Length: 492
Image (tube, rainbow, N blue to C red):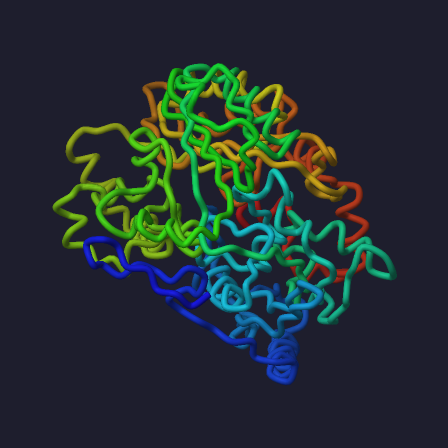
């Protein structure tokens, strides 16, 4: 498990399981001390004042109103508390990033059942704000592998919520509540065992319908049958197991499904790829039929270039890339640059002086039923001039109050991130509104981490308004935490 792999050219690659950064669990006593500090900071906030986390970073793409009062002290809540190898569970603090979580778990031979694509997403954030990745067709969304969680409520109390018992209502309403029902301080999650490598197969489809049909068969059987309407039907071996599944649409005639499977073949080390180098991962899909990565590098393959969004900063230009330190090729660095632009509008000012049109930010993840996915993608190609689009199948495993996906039903997440020009006679937000309408017309759902434009009655009809209000009154009776609609639509 600690073997270091060396390529034929002599370059040392990542270790098979153990990541470059290794972290250790902190134990229960340190966690209790951190919770005490958290509650003490709550008591210091004046009665009637709003309560928010005092944190400097975020993976949200919604502007937030400035917080006048002091925030909650979460400085000690960013670690793994303990790992139970026999039970295959871990107790994790709510502000622990997935980068930290993975670094702690891999030396034990485990990973979270779902690891969202970006390193600095926190476990608590992924559970209260949803997350997804290529294991979601097997394991659902991150909150569906949570056994129980301790939540600081709007009333300042710590309650332990689980699927059954006194606080089951909070447990099922917590996902997609975005911190408006409370903040997770400890989560007990189920784990999956890992193997050293992930082998991938990149299969091209000339038809969106054929790609979606293949997704349905893979999800149903957990294997790749090698028979479909793909560009190269012979690319897959019949009966090949599929442990990970996502894909990219480059155009209506060029879509790739990426099929991943575990491997512990030591000879794989001779052909390992390393996308911290010169080539962004997504560009490899049209060029390679197969690939191999360490488990660590597979988990963070998208983070290096923020999927493909690093091109907005010139980082995919070979000259710029050589000068851009590898340690800065990561999503949180790009996110900070976007934050600076949102604050100072340097690029927007330059574009105006050059006579270029203003641009609308279109950063969305939407879930469509598998049978409606091709229809949505065709609509998207006709209405949104922005490619590629990430595709990630998922199957929900339970019933959740505020994000009502049908358990056992196959959905496909479509992710698209960037900006589009605001055409004459149009205004900022028009494209996003059209996307919301198109998704609704096709019985889909939209994640709420970015801009949303729903009117209030429509919003609550789609996101469990009746249940939300009941739970809100019980756990935040004085409305110390923001209301969900006010937070995600009005940006309160």
